[in-house]
Image 1 (tube, one colour):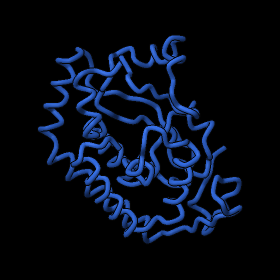
Image 2 (cartoon, rainbow, N blue to C red):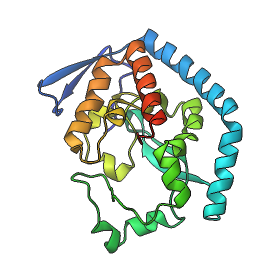
Image 3 (cartoon, one colour):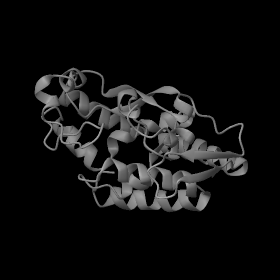
Image 4 (spheres, one colour):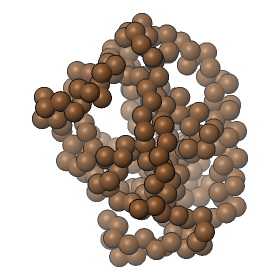
Length: 226
């Protein structure tokens, strides 16, 4: 089911995990324009400033495991639309195939639809370092520039994971970071993660975005994977 916030000034969110039975999501046209302008400016600046480091990371990944250093995967975006997300590859080339094998499925430690293994053998040596500093996410600046994503917003999931999650989180454009990324702990229940996504949708504003950007930078500087 596709959702659409563009043609409505108010959207009623029903059946959320929030303690309130109904939450209102108001359209914010001025904020949306400012946010998009910021996304374009920030992504262009980021790509320009980080072009050399990104080239170096590409080389390191290739040397660690020959093949494309960029991992491309389908994700679910705003209103349920699909798009291709870009990341630096942090796993072996056949990681997706291994994920669906019986051996790996039995090791899944997530209590919800997400797939997570604490000591995942598919992760490359370079991948562990990239993930620790969230450097593997840098290519998503191109997703932001294209308009698939925003700097701040709920993280996008693959279709098979999103189908088991609340659809309300698709009312806004997905982003590089949001509330649950900066508050994330390995044992955080999926319901709590969804609560934080709904919190952003309700509280989204320029002030909220700036605070989340600063908090995200603080998490990255201290080496906590967000």
